Length: 267
Image (cartoon, rainbow, N blue to C red; front, side, top):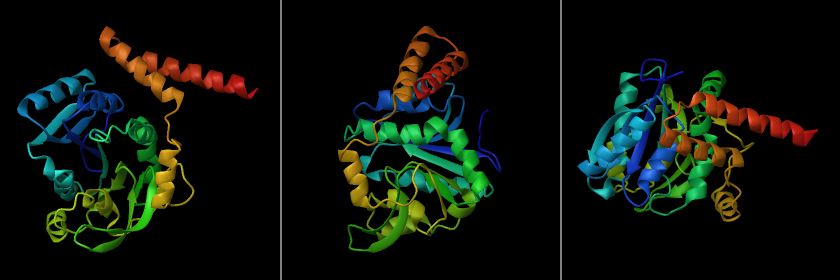
């Protein structure tokens, strides 16, 4: 099943900062959404855009890219594009993710977000539509955030900034560009903005909102280490791409093996 941008469907936005190990990160993430159409904001050179296109082609991902060269645009330009697309498709939904950890090297946090949302995005998309809620995503947090100019905002957001939301809700948000100017282009606005108008949230793998200190503690304790299933799938993807094999039979085989092993261990 392929989700393209269309009324009532799913629009996918991917922000890429082409630095450090960005190639392996984008390959890892795009391998989880093969065959999709993706709107990409890229901070990088023209050569890096060509490399990104080559990575996307491996997974039959169709990219529509807006490229920027100044790192200080952060994820702001992604939000501006989101608002453009939402106005064109008010009945749809938007999935957002980015190259989390490309500067910090925080691999296990990104992998955990990948597992929770990207690896199951069709299921999560269906659950959100059925729930009638505004938004969903991993590591849901409620807190008061203080921006760099001293402004405080009680907001809901998703730690790491991977989320899926209805365009109906996204259309209620204020104009991002103006809000960004008011807050002196604080980079954390991009993470907090999803909760600006207090969306109703479909909780994903948690029973209540987390506090910031709980998220920090779980990261330190490495609670978010990805399951073995995910790591094996990543290995299968890399081997399959090198050998040129189609995806479905091998992915299904791995999932059947793990279901059988889980059943055997529970007997």
